[in-house]
Length: 68
Image: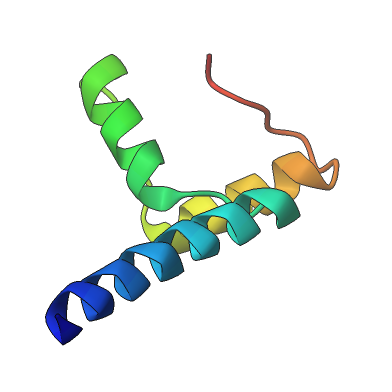
């Protein structure tokens, strides 16, 4: 009983975290990596720091936009 409740709370926490990140516009690195591997396998994948910097620049007007 308690392990099911713990699993449910863990899952709810994950969904809540994802929702909050989307609400404030934080990029999802894992989604980016999957996209790059599926759609652009010939291109190098940025490190998390490079990705975060690029997304911040794109969001706040420093140039780069989306690849697709």
